[in-house]
Length: 337
Image (cartoon, rainbow, N blue to C red; front, side):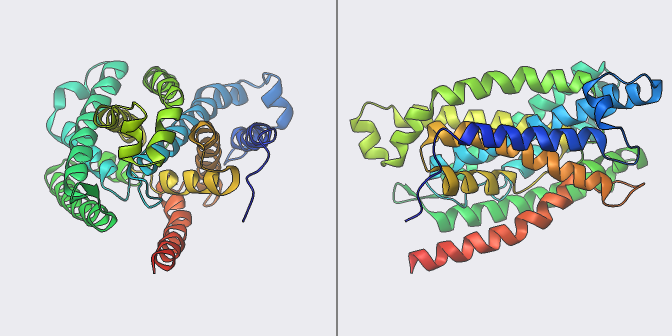
């Protein structure tokens, strides 16, 4: 049996990986910035503007979105006690995207509001879509009082199909400008990150992460089973509602600003459990660090792969996550036989 990595090594390794990916993200691209300019503010005005106003907010946005998606995946997998649970596969991201699409196409007033107002409005719309979708999934996946994996996946497929139809209808009735915004947003894109948006995401995400970290012990109780968790004093139903709300907020804020970015929430928590063990006191922070590194690296690849053009980061994560999901599904089937 594989032994988890020593607890004294997990944070240094993940922090070092995140630092390395961050420096690559700041230096690489269609316009190269030297390594010393990253450590010391460059004298060149063009380098300074690109570094401070384009790449640095994009790096922070990628790290925060990767953190939010990875932690959301870890929470859903702990809640459903299944490694296949993921906000994208289960339709939570798609449900949130429909509400944001409605806001883009049918609400011209907020589009002309200040950027920070528009940003919070998008977050609220995505949260509403995500929370409704989470509730529907939770209800549909129950079978004889327990969450059925089969029903879980079928509910996700159905919601993704319905959300795709709704998004297609919005695309059909949208103007040329709205169509372009919907198209790039649906494929996942970090190119529009600005400091105002970074501050909005940080103001929502950091309190949620602090709350989730404090709930790690209760998440461990859920691993024992619902009856055992109740016996140990956990209000299981109330705790589930809180976790679903946190997942909906995390997914909502990411969908609102970066569109649909899939498979981060599936891959990262599973890899963390394979390497560091199943203790959620380690899974949550390690997933946050690894999720930040993975999405930052994927965004860097998306920027340099087709220079001078730019590939949507959602395509890169799908190219990585698709084969990973198939491997995980086959592994899960073999284990249940």
